[in-house]
Length: 233
Image 1 (tube, one colour):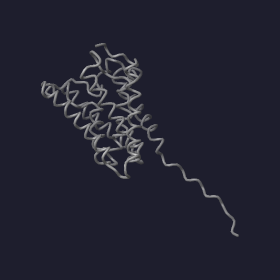
Image 2 (cartoon, one colour):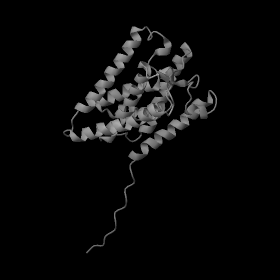
Image 3 (cartoon, one colour):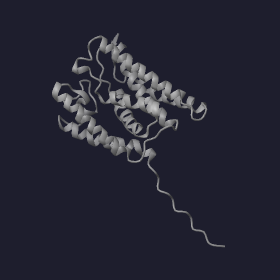
């Protein structure tokens, strides 16, 4: 096994496969009867079973009792949100899942914090989970089953900060580094360009707001054009 190469052939194939999978799922959904739930329920079930298998393995190895292996990263929360959105199409849940997946999980795919040989169980699991998070969110919106609603940017930012406050408390108590609130990831990321701790956290707030706003642009209600004036006959 070789170590993982950033933006090497394997990494580029993984990045390309995610939107292609979402496009394939969308194509299949369009071929199903209108209102069919089977594909999204099946995808949600796959994600749920995959997560259960992963955390069962951690529990069997005694790692879930280790504060450093708790499912508290932003992508762990996004995974749960995407699963719930796939099962329920709840608008509020999808609002949070959409931004968490496309802003958070996409960044994790671009700058994966993976160590050790590749491919291995844990590195493959990392890319499967994060890839399906993004593909699931894209599939729902591309197939027309869900879309971010008005005001979703502010709600997603509020949720992000509430979750960060909760995770930051865990980090402070157990000296962990979930959401990279105490230190930047070792493999490098966008945070490297945002200054030292704690300023990169404040800068990341601004980046998140801009990215969320850009992600909402395709769904922004357009101003209605005035109707042309017509003369009475």
